[in-house]
Image (cartoon, rainbow, N blue to C red):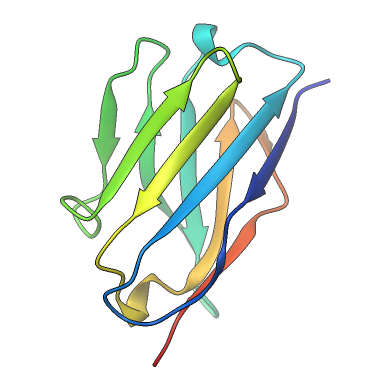
Amino acid sequence: EVQLLESGGGLVQPGGSLTLSCVVSGFSISTSGVTWVRQAPGKGHEWVSSISRGGISSYADSVKGRFTISKDNAKNTVYLQLNYLKTEDTAMYYCGLGITRGQGTQVTVSS
């Protein structure tokens, strides 16, 4: 059974940074891509970033240049570094592999 566990969210001021982690169990991320999506209050899910099994990254225009996705195959963990955070980045952040998604971690950007 594939399981994903996100962590690292929190409350941060505009301009601040956070690092989100997604620990994957039951499947090797060296053989599959992983995606981060987010859902802001009252809005639908928004794709944020993906990293392929080979380590190629892609980003939504809204986060390009501010967020960085990376992974550690040995730890079966994917990271999302969030820099220069804006209030509009406030959302629940989920990582996903295939059709499986974790429970999410809340990011709140507020002064």
